[in-house]
Image (cartoon, rainbow, N blue to C red; front, top):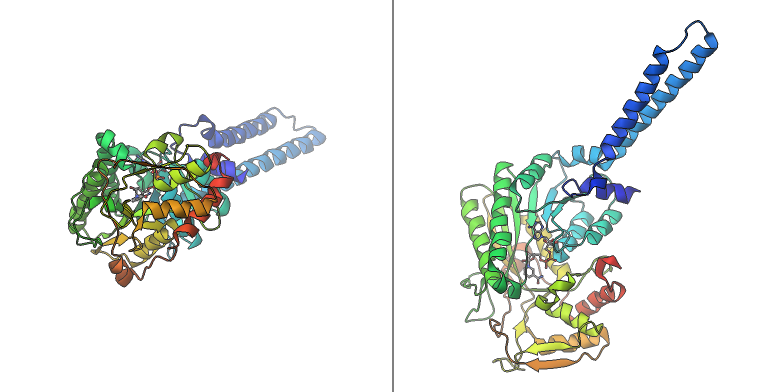
Amino acid sequence: MGESIQILEVSSFLPLPSSLPVLPTFVLIYLQTLRVAVDWVQGMDFSCLRKKQHVLGKILIATFFAAVCVFMLKLSPRFSSRSVFAKHESGVTHVLVTGGAGYIGSHAVLRLLKDSYRVTIVDNLSRGNIGAVKILQKLFPQPGRLHFVCADLGDARAIDQIFTQNAFDAVMHFAAVAYVGESTLEPLRYYHNITANTLVVLEAMAKHRVKTLIYSSTCATYGEPETMPITEKTPQFPINPYGKAKKMAEDMILDFSRTTNMAVMILRYFNVIGSDPEGRLGEAPRPELREHGRISGACFDAARGIIPGLKVKGTDYPTPDGTCIRDYIDVTDLVDAHVKALDKARPKNVGIYNVGTGKGRSVKEFVEACKKATGVNIKVEHLARRPGDYAEVYSDPSKIHHELNWTAKYTDLEKSLRVAWRWQKTHRNGYAS
Ligand SMILES: NC(=O)c1ccc[n+]([C@@H]2O[C@H](COP(=O)([O-])OP(=O)(O)OC[C@H]3O[C@@H](n4cnc5c(N)ncnc54)[C@H](O)[C@@H]3O)[C@@H](O)[C@H]2O)c1
């Protein structure tokens, strides 16, 4: 029961009619009970002592029911969490996690809750999973820990209302559409979802004086740099709408931060893989996004026979084995970087960090690791290069190491894939299974 009430409460912006009648029902029962009591009092005959006792009993019962209603109202998360989430509390940091129902966001929420943060997730569930939110709620059912609101960041009024109703101390802004290929087909969607929605978040933060922002950016903002590894000083010349939209969002954040005492951390992730080592969460993109998907998803789909095999696009790149080189960062390390960034965020300070391992791995190496991790001899087809792919991308993570004391620990590709595969195997239909 606790769980279903949690979902009802947290869905204040979800158009679920079933979520609406919880409070009115209690109020109706309460009023009905009082009316019955009043009717009894008005219609009673005071001459009869036996009846008097009878009536007294009825009043006691009515009072009892009223008390139960009030008690249940107080227990309902809608009643209790509003008061807890709406107030700043000394010693408690309340973090708004946008996109917290998604792959990286849900892992970040897990870590934040584990570290005693108070979390509100805002997600429109366009690409995330309510199943992930339910798991997090089951793990942290105590009042005042986790709160979920289904809302679209493009809806400025809803976002303003959420900021009005919640006392946030910081924002981790993960929510975004995030497929390079899709961005070239639907550029406006990307500028709207990434750039325009970040503006909505910034305006709400400014209006409600929320002073700390941790922003999810990407190595795609660098484009195709001439020299490797990529440092934070590497010029940013993004070459696809996804990277451009993220770069514009970064620019807005930086311009705005110059006019305020905001604490800003911009984290530029490289290629994210893996899942929670304890198997509680995983990566479960929508099936319709498979065609745009990332290499780890494709590898697991091939291992499960959902797709016939892996298509390696380009074997004639100027790299040791001819396939593209990327920097794969485990999601557990990535969320650790977020927590460290949040911890070190200071007013009027902007930190920009690459989050990668610093080590490039070729697609061929990745496929071999995937075969070993899954134990499946995945069929591999070698095709011509895909337009827009760059040969080699890997980070120089020394800045984040020196300034935030962060280093990637989960750097064994095969191990990360094995952990993720364990979750994939037991969740054939994602969070639905
Ligand atoms: N996965 C990677 O390899 C990678 C690499 C670099 C950067 N990033 C960035 O990390 C962030 C998270 O990526 P992910 O891989 O977890 O993606 P994801 O699709 O799993 O999660 C994104 C979440 O945002 C939500 N969302 C999207 N648009 C929204 C909107 N308008 N309002 C409210 N919620 C919305 C989705 O429903 C989803 O739950 C993104 O900003 C992405 O650009 C990811």
